[in-house]
Image (cartoon, rainbow, N blue to C red; front, side, top):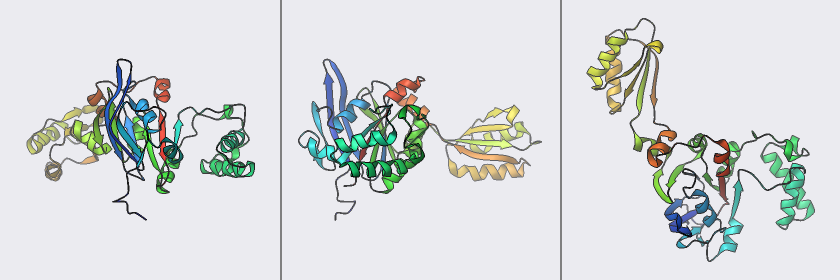
Length: 304
């Protein structure tokens, strides 16, 4: 049994390239996804996310570079790679007139399971997703709210690896251990959510004063101690201050106490992933939910 330090990463891509005519959809993508993690891939529509995933899952052959899934080359060993992964789009290819059990049994039989094994596996999956009570309901009646966050965490805890391509930034922020931002076919940034947020701007200190505290005195104290200008919201008695040196926060709290200023709220506000997305790609997340959903895919690698 190999240790985690010596085994191959779940996904390794080096210089992946894919062209369609004169369009270089993927232009040298490098990715390393460690086994047993959730890896988020973000980018605007047309950035190359889906094309990259299609190459990693053997649906498209790279025109340049190489990629491996658990050490198996996607171009030379596609049959092995396909046994190690599962690809799930936002919209599944299912018969909405059939029940959840019937649909799952069909896919089980297509994968070579016997009728009995397919039925047992269908039951296991429905229980896993908390859908046992809806097992006989036609899929057309399933709500869009039957989501998967807890299931993704359980999959990773049991040894799976998940590559999540999404434009739902809150989903990536909550789930992903590391995130790559792709734009114009290239990885323009990579790191943890906190690292990406820190790369585009400072954190802010949010201070809400208790009734009776003097906002002008508070603003002057901030300027003196932190050498910074506070943004003041008088109606909320709140100050927002750029936090360049976290070590000075203690000095500010002591100065507030000495000045008779009392706080009802104290928090640190990081830049959001929306700000990261806008800064790195120059575009906001599409407001059209349909467009966002159509570009969402998951690649789930099983335990190596």
